[in-house]
Image (cartoon, rainbow, N blue to C red; front, top):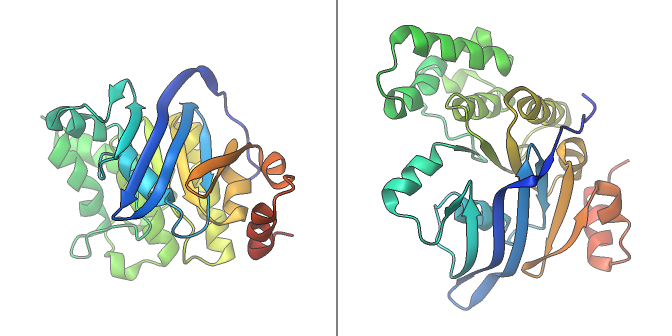
Length: 257
């Protein structure tokens, strides 16, 4: 599926970050990060392993606390928000974990209905079944509804993980290394799904990856994390035309035809 650039509202920042710092003991991971995510945008965050990409989205989701900085997500200041408000905000964020994070003892149906039962008040059995069917149709896996995670391929588990996130209709999707550990064909399917989710659900997304095929396939805009800060941003071509040895090494390591 060729990337279709969605309507991006650059007057509407759904995430705004300024001066974000995070250190672990004496190791400073993020050294004053500035970042905006616009409504309807797929933003790819690139960087080598250990550069703080996953730390960034965990801070956005309130799973980690920043040391310094301003982080506004959907109008809420993450640094000042109360725990109850943070829980409510998280329901508007879809977090797709690298390992899919499915419950092995539950069928696909049960994995998908779990967040609905837990978070949606007064939902009926009919509404639950309808949401599950719609979500499985959206991710192309209706036939797996009664299967266990152990019976699914890695790509199918990844899609079900994304589906379980989508079932609550989040406004923002956070993808952590969505193609990690997948073969090239399956990775292409996941890239296509990320674009389809953007179009179908009108989501704004941050995609953390070091996979340049993924970055090129899904990104409306790319930002590159180098030495704890975003050094470059733009389209795929704009970022990788930079005459910076660190960028060239990153490109050559991935090797895209």
